[in-house]
Structures are given as C-alpha cells and as structure tokens.
Length: 507
Image 1 (cartoon, rainbow, N blue to C red):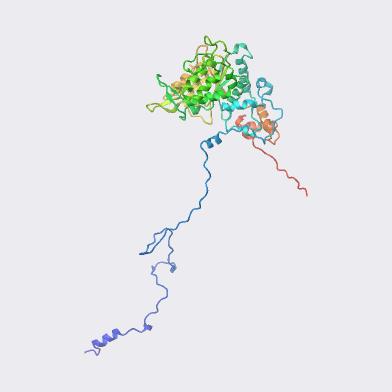
Image 2: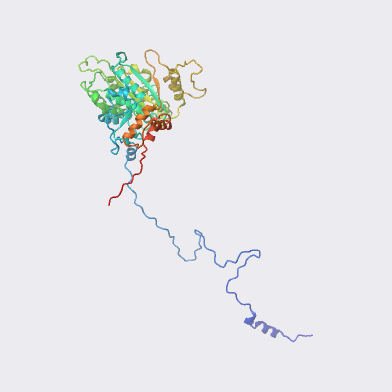
C-alpha cells in the first residue's frame, strides 16, 4: 500500500526549525568532563600559572623582562697592602686601664738570681723594651696587653738560667768563664717556651751580651724569601740574602751600644769598602744597606764577635769581645726538606741553606764557634710544629742518654725499620766527642703551687681578679691548669668577675 507522505512533504518537515522548548536548556557553566570514579568536587576555577613557566607569546605581542633592581650598597675602602698583616702582628705592651702594681721590681743583675723572689713577677725595664721589640721577642698572642706594663714570672728554670749567665760572664766561678751552654727547650703547649727565650734575651741585654736571634725558624724554609745557589759547592748550597740582611738589621738595632764600642780587628778581603777604623755597627750596616753582600758581611761580623785577638797590625783598638746569646724559636722546621727547589726541581733540604746550616752547626761545634763563651737556646713550638718522626726519635734518644740509658741497651729508642728516618737529623743528635760538650734537652713543665700563687696574686694586684687568693682557690686553679701550665693559668686569671653594685639615686 502506498504511503500518503510524499518526498516534498518530508523535505519541508526537515527544514522546519525545531521549537525552542524542545531543546534542552543551555548550561551557564561550562561542562567539565571528569572520570566517573573521581570522588573530589569539580574545580571550576582555571589553574594558576606556575612561576617561571614558559608562556606562549602571541604574534606581534611584546613582552619585556622585568627584574627587581638591587640596592647599591656603598662598600668600604679595601685595606692597604700589608695593613692586615700589620694588624695581625701588632704588639701591645701596655694597658692604661690596668692598675699599677706597687712595689714591683725590675729585672736586673741582682734580682734575676735572687731565690727569695721566686714566684714573683719582675717587670721588664722600660729602656729594654725597644731592644726586645727589635729582636721580635714578643708574640701577638701573649697576654702583654692586659697589664699596666710587661713583666715575667721568676720560676725555677729562670733562676737556673740566670746562674748560668753569671758563671759564663765570670761573676761566679772563674773556671766557668767562657763556657758554652747548649740547650733544646721543649714542653707542653702553654708551658712558656717562647717566654723562656724572652727571659734569656732580657738577661743577655742586662749582662751586655750580643744577642742574635731567629724569632721564627719557619720563615727561613717556607719559600718566602729569595735564594740563590753558591758556585763551587757540592752538594749545592744556597744563600738567602734578604733573610741575612733582616737578621743584621735586628742585631744592630738591639745591640747598638755594644757594637758601637767595638772596632774592627780582622782583615776582610771580601769587603774592600770597609775601613780599618770602622766599628762593628758600621760593618753590620753594610749588610742591610746592600743585600747582595749580606752573607759576606754576616760572616765578617761573626768572625769579629768570636775573635780572641786582633790581626797583626790592628792591636791598637782591640777590646775583648763579650759572650753571645743565640736563640731560635721553632727549630723543628729546620729538620726537614724546605719549600725551596733546586735546578732539577728536587726539594732543597733545610741543612743545604747556609744560613740555617750556620745555626745548626752551633749544636755540634758551639764551643769552637763561640770562643768567648755564650749560650745557645733552641726551642720547639707546639702551636706551629710540623710532625717529623726523625726529630721525635732523636729527642727521645737525647732524653734517654741524659737519663743514663746506654745506646747499646735494648731500652734505647731506635727508629723503626722502613720508617725512612732522615740520616742528617740522626747524625746531628749523635753524642759529640772530644772537648765539645753535648747539648742538653730541657723540658719545661708547670709552675709549682707557690709560683702559681705568686703569679695569680699579680693578676689580683693588677685589678683582673676580684676573688680572694688563698690556698684552696690556688689549688683549684693549679689543678684546672694541668699542674700549673702557665698558659692555662693566664686564661683562668684574666677572667674578670665582679659583683653588681647598685648606687642610690639622690633627689
């Protein structure tokens, strides 16, 4: 049966728009497709853009980079060349805020050997301070700046050293006059090794000796000074002209009065510009005025100071030479290879530096070198001390020989096999033969209780201590300081403790 709808009716029906009510209502909010298993609420807000993310730039749309301007800060002027080093090595010897210690005696020929003053602090004479500064006897980390004036405690080791000065000067036993005493000073950190050398220098100036000192042995082997090989030496030897020139300058400034009173008594062909009427001060000045001739000048000065008679034709103005005091601090730095290099870039041993070798030879040939007598004091350092196995063994052997242990005894210390011990160091510490005396090992310990009490009373009299110094309190501090180690006692004594006091206000 044929349908009553024709094709044209169907076409008009499809072209007729659908009524609006038939269409579903348009949603105001956009539809977001979410998973059917998601349980969180639908987020309608657009996600925030992350900082630093790349943003797509539309065509011909400009975008500038905006950065916050840093605030310009004014920087201080940088320190001048050498200013920081000068500040680090500055020495302050007086504190005007400290109290003046009444009745304090100065170090002199009489007080330094007076056993009744043991444990008391003796002041260093004011005219001597410039001499001690010249030889760099003071160190920056020592507590000189907390007292009114510099002073040093008279301990047992100081009294023994003062008696040696008297014997060598001929004031005591005449048989001891002209003797040479050689010692290596060791001890714990803070035991006063450097101050012990300072006390020896002060006594040398009191006795009118010639004081020659190396304040820091490390500076001669650290590679900081110029050096050059000496022709014709095998093995090659090296000279350090600037270091020798600096030592000559220190020697002249510290011993000017003694050197100016002595005339040249020997002929020195290596110094043609030296006049026959020159003093030893004029001779030493040639060395630090021209560093190129510093080493020949030092050799000539040493010959003059150790001369016992004048050369033929120069006997007119000859005067007997005084004894000499030679001190070196930090001797361990000379017992190893230095920071210098040879022509083949091999390290140069410290004993191949002629300046170092000269002072090292005094341990073996001190009596032959110091013909007018004197004292050789070399100290180790614990604050700046390299670890040298051979030196430790050599010091142990020296201590064993002093204790009476025979080198053939099984208890005698010996280097371990395959330890690579330095033969030069072991040879240096071997026992000497003949009339040459063997150098001694002096180990500094702590102060006794009586010495510690006198030392702490000095703190109280200077205004640093506000506590009663009695036996109980001194015993406590003596124990806390490790048995009277003077460096630890200084730390305990310099702490100021005062009670708060209220002052009434008057209307």
